[in-house]
Every structure is written in C-alpha cells, then in structure tokens.
Image 1 (cartoon, rainbow, N blue to C red):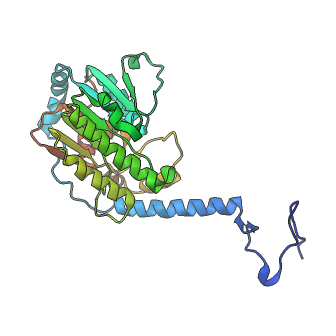
Image 2: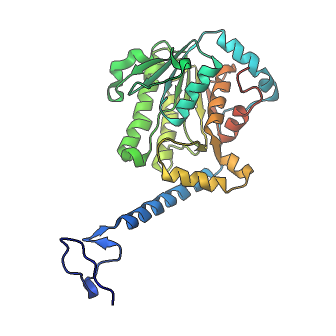
Image 3: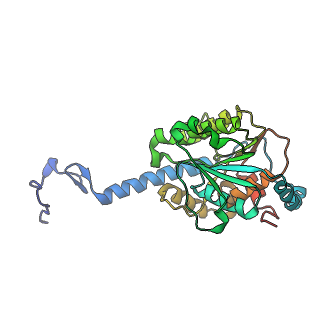
Length: 308
C-alpha cells in the first residue's frame, strides 16, 4: 500500500466513501487538473467556433475585385492620394490595427493620420513621427467628440474577447464603444466608415460574439454614412502578442485542412488590411458594402496591392 503524502497543515487522509477525487486537495482542483480543464474548455470552444465558421453565409451587397479594377489599382491609389484625405483608426494597438497603420503609412494614402485610443502608443520608427494621437476615455466618449471631427475616412478595429473582458466587458467594448464611436464619427463629418466585423455575424445568433457583431453592423448602418464598408473575415491568421489558446487551436485546425478549405474560412491579417485599403481607394456608388472572407481574399491579394 502506498504511503500517504500530506503537506504541512493537512489533516489525516480520507478513506473509503469520504476519499476525495484524485487531483484535488480540500475541494480545490490541482494545478495540472485545472490546466487540463481549461485546455478542454478552450478546445471545445474552438471546435464550436470552427464549425460555425464552416457554415456558408450570404455576403449581401459587396464586391471582390474585377480584372479591370485590379489593373487600375495603382492609378486609383495615386488619385486617392491627390485628394489629401484624413483618416482615423480605432483599435490601433490590436493586431489588425497595428498592421493597418503600418500599411497606411507605407502607402502614403492619407495626408493626416489620427489614432483614437485609451492610451498613447509609442513608436520608434521615423515613419510614425507625424501620426496624431487622441487619448480618450471610452466610458465618457461624449467628452471627446472633438477627437472624431474632421476625418474623411474611419477604420474601426476595436474589439476584445469574452475570456479577456468577461461577457459584460465584451459587450461594452465590441458594441457600446464601437456604436458611440461611429455616432461621433458621423457627427464629426466622416464620410466613409469601415467596420471590422466577423464571418458569421448575425444579430439573431445564439452565440454572444456573433450576435453582438451582427447587432453592431445593423446599428451602424442606421447612422447612414455616405459609404459604409463591413469586413467579415474568418479566422485571422497572425502572431498575437497576447495569448489566446482558443484562437491558437482554431488556427491549428484550419492549418490541417486543405488549402482551398482553409482559405475559405481563414485569412492573414495583412490580406484583410490590404483589402480594406484597396477598397477605400476605389470609387463606389454603394451606400453599404459587405465583404465576406472570399471577397477579402480577392481584393487583398489583387495584383498591384503593394504600393507602386
């Protein structure tokens, strides 16, 4: 019979029906057991999300890129530069926002670039020296209405996760902050509002994440921007600075699929960013554009997407 191992301060080992489950001490789960449970939960959540992303969706009014538009991109980009437009970015500290800012500066598309966020970001590169930064309190955005004034184009990449912020915090960031920001942008004169949403966004969804994304899409549309572009990427492929085990498992899942399947439900962040910018420089008479994952791939990988 194995001897009992009891740490300092522990009572006699229980036996028979009173014996505790393996891996537990005083009713608490041991660290390995807790880690296993967390990984199992993350895997289950990742599987659910992956299955949701595999469902087909109606992209609605949107557009990929025609051959003529692809060939015209360098000229469209140059024409856009000549208009000396200004832009703001919400969520520039996130993965997509960081890449978007870098690409905007490299392509030199806007005469003025402003970041709106809860803290000032630090940049070492010379290319960022003329970037304006507006630090705001998202809980009191009405007090910072001036930060949203005078921008022709706006990109909203705000977002958090339920795991990181909790259900209430997730709704506050992904819905309330985004909607109030869009409202102030509209009042401040923004003509073209770009919203980073998600594949599967549906205000009627039983999943909170997709439900909130769908609700935000619909409510921003009610603001009636001159031009409103929604981007619904699948799984964003990137090397996050923060750890998100669930997303890591999803990326591994899609990495095991045939390329044709994986590209239908996932997309590199750089491709999303280039699709956003290529879409912004091309003229459109549509009040609303909805670009699904396939359209994002088409437009983001179009020849001439790099700066000329």
